[in-house]
Length: 74
Image: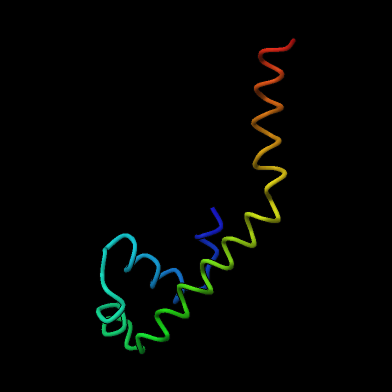
């Protein structure tokens, strides 16, 4: 997954907010950054993952279809 390729601070902010369910304020204190920086890390991380998915959508959709077609339509 592309998430693992995010820069360390973006990945850490995402994990703390989404996995550990911390607020932006709590993440800011834990990472020693401002709440706005936490928000920016999350925005950049989402954009990066979204761009990655857009650029790989053909593969994501096509490969399973080809596999299923091969199995059912021999």
